[in-house]
Length: 122
Image (cartoon, rainbow, N blue to C red):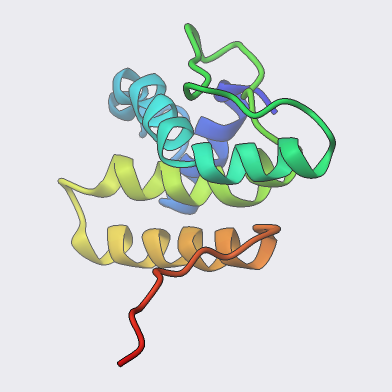
């Protein structure tokens, strides 16, 4: 999935069209790079599962036309919701909350490992 395809999917989730949502395009690349940075743990978990080397730093995109450098499940199932949440954050809190929740639920459903904090036993 390319960044452009993800952006169009995010616009659709926000009830926008490419014409009516043109304002958001200037923020899409930065928001996708933010999602990639925030998803490094999940990207590395998938890489380790597939016997690949974990990344030391999150991948970055230079243009929306590029393929999203993450697993297909993450790019297709999760990123459109995460991107729509980030794009709507300043404009519509209800859409932001809905999209952010959908992103979190999908991420938890697909992540191959769950991390929890270690608690001291007394």
